[in-house]
Amino acid sequence: MFEKMEFKKIIVSVLFVLMLLLTACNGNVNVNSNTETSGGQSQIQNESSKPNGTTSKPSTEADTLKPNNTSSETLEEIKKNHKDDDNNGRCDKCNESVLVYIDLFAVNDLHGKICDSASQPGVDELTSYFKLMYEKEDNVVVLSSGDMWQGSSESNLTRGHLTTEWMNYIGFESMTVGNHEYDWGSAAIADNAKVAKFPLLAINVYSRDDNKQVDYCQSSVLIERNGIKIGIIGAAGDNYTSIATEMSKDVYFKTGKELTALVKAESEKLKKQGAQIIVYSIHDGYGKSSSGTGMIADDTLKGYYDATLSSGGYVDVVFEAHTHQNYVLKDAYGVYHLQGGGENKGISHVEIAVNAVNLNKRVTEAEFISNTIYSYLGDDPIVEALLKKYENELEISNKLLGRNPSYKSSDDIGRLVAQLYYEAGVERWGNKYQIVLGGGSINTRNPYNLAVGDVTYSQLLSLLPFDNDLALCSIKGSDLQKNFFNRSSYFIYYDEYGQGVKNNIQANKTYYIIADSWSYGWEPNKLTVVEKYDPNVYARDLLAQYILDGRLK
Image 1 (cartoon, rainbow, N blue to C red):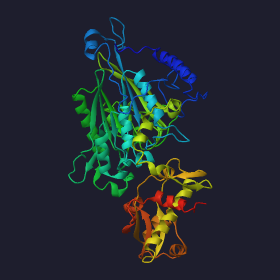
Image 2: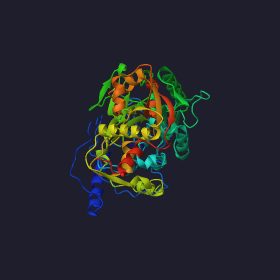
Image 3: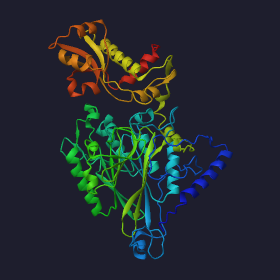
Image 4: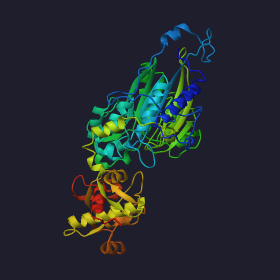
């Protein structure tokens, strides 16, 4: 029977506390008295308590956590044996529940943050949380809204394979392709698609060669939980410009009205195939965080999501990504939009109740689940097993480069990288070209700074994860003035010659600078590549050598 009693969560919580006490007595859990709930958490219905540990038996590396749940009555049997004319969720004759509860969990913008750090837990604790959910709830679905691979040594050095294998272990049903999946080009995505035991989704990514949808992505996937069919549609969102130009020349994104039309058509197709729930997983999102459940007006949705998808009943819930915000918001048509932060700061959860008799449905819970909820759980062994499997690829990540004697902010690192670009360019091409400056759009990632202490290559890769090639570029004086000297958001470095050029720049004269592929690939900068630097040498590698040389002060 699809019964879900009101006191179910209380019973689970009590049992869990007993398990926690038993585990703590065995010395397996560090019991912390901090009972703070998730920062910025927004819910419709709060659980009476959240888990603080797990004693469930670990699965082996080859196993998948996702169970094959069954029930004493099938969906067809409920339709045949029960009636609910008053639509109250209970049989008119026997008063038993006829509701099927579907629990949807979404992970977005993980960026390869697999291992524990000083500031947050890794996915070993998140794995334990999902394991607990699979044991506790009848119909769990886990999906991703993109940007899962790029951003850590564990994922970058394995080109996403380690993260993909973790997702296989969890039992992800789908993964929407995000902009940073393209940081290594289409070939790497296609390669991971072969490793994945779940489909990659992107209804709106098309090949420039034949104007057809890329063959490594599907538009949607149709899954089933206890007779309820769930369609998941994936879209990359309007973030094509957030991809390095050299890595995305072979594809283009359909956005706006074109994307809306694609999603509507796919929704209709899935419904004809029997889908009772339509999930829209889009790698794009609302730009502001929310501390509570709120409403978003139609105009705030423009540019990343068409509200007519809600008004027409084409989608039932939207899982979002890209902006690294955490929120639970409702649009003007009553459809929930959720995003779970980024880099394992949390996940999104929606519970949908489906009436098995008449197939009416409603959202009964929508929440952002902070990592503070699962950070106390025991470590699942999958991470250690995967690190062992890829230890050869990851060997360089633990290399000690030297010591950082003083705190370096994100701006400090940006300025230093610009200097290293300039120095590398002068050393390589200085005898042939007068180089004005080095630098451009240089962005760090989590943790956005370099603390005092020993520095490993892994730390630099997290700070500067982007594989942006270096090149000598030419540029007209007017564009140099506007796009580099006068752009406060860019980090640039120049010596006396560069200062002289800045003071007396000639608009039509050609100058030479050193920039990486993110900056020279952005057409408005109007840079022309003259000659490329050594392949596979990136900002983090120049900084690593700088530290090895003992120059870091």
